[in-house]
Length: 306
Image (cartoon, rainbow, N blue to C red; front, side, top):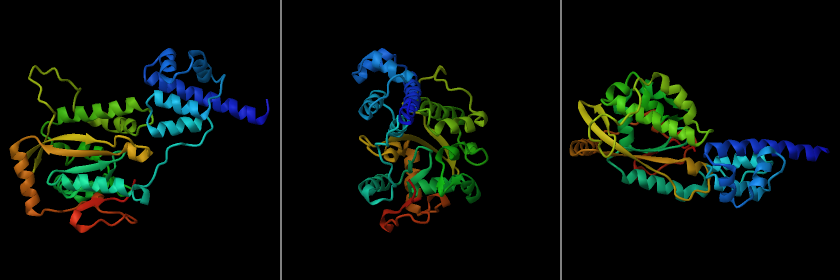
């Protein structure tokens, strides 16, 4: 076997192993995946065992049939010896201007309620003034610095912070279990997800018990976060917004976390906080060096990273 043939064989084996892992993760038989991708089961078997080398179009077709994240599709292409297909652009780049402006508009219009834009590692990439108020009301500057890496506050680590944040959460047993379940779900859907490492880091010391809805009580529509701030109890629930048709790796991984008041009392408190002009901004919400400056009238903060 010549050198080129040997490299193709190595790539075929590497690709086949990754393909088999993703098929198992999606709990699909070879026959089911073959039908979804419109290929023969025999050819799929050859691909998984390294007896056949896929074309670039075949890799793309199989990754679409497996509904793989764009980052994982690129990795599958690389494993087969091909260049990545999907770009990963900086959020501050010219090509991302319309996306950036849409994000700014969303978080600005969400005032006076907190809004965070987070990436796949749960780093806060953008937030509004209400979010900054929420953070500074719950954590002091030293705690924020400890939870900040590369200029970005980690939102999930913030929620599990044991000394200042967790004691404020009156229903931590319920909220903590739900947060761990979310990390577990994300890690289970993508073996390369940073949520897997966060689950291993935060889970053992979470002290929140196991997730269970079998309490004998009627279930509410959502699980609110009940948190003590400035002598009051705020009850908030979250929605998660993502981009519907992303063709950029980083863009697909961005999530917009919007908090809403779960009762009129919380609504009134958040509106009063907004009118009071409390705009203390923690370090993690300040733009880092190189960040694109934002217009003051938008009253937003971005850390300038993607």
